[in-house]
Amino acid sequence: MAISNMHETLLLYTKKKSLINDKLSETMMNMLNSSRQVAECQAKYNDQITDIYYNYYEEDQDTYEVLTEQLENQHELELANLNAWEQDLELEKNNLETQLNEINTFESTWTKLLQTNIKNDFSYGGVSQ
Image (cartoon, rainbow, N blue to C red; front, side, top):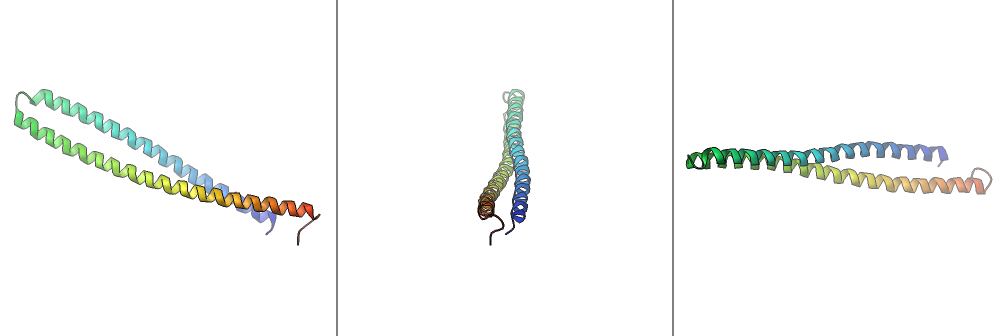
């Protein structure tokens, strides 16, 4: 195979790695955002449960229990949605990392092949046959 074709193949791998790294960075930022949203959701829940406690616990026990149960159900639903999103992001991250490792392996193989062809061309004083 001509050396220029090998260089072109290596450039294609470099471009593909760049695209995957971009997607991986975006996925990692989304994972960070999901963790932040979980923390915000928990803080909001804690504030709301505290408000319900101070406003209803001693005065109206039945209302307190109903509001607490509604808030817990809503909180669990929000956490379930966030956890599902985090799992999807983790799966996407693993897939991208696997693709990146495959491309690195291919790139390494082509680089070695290119080096061997260049060495052979110079060792024999011209184009090898």
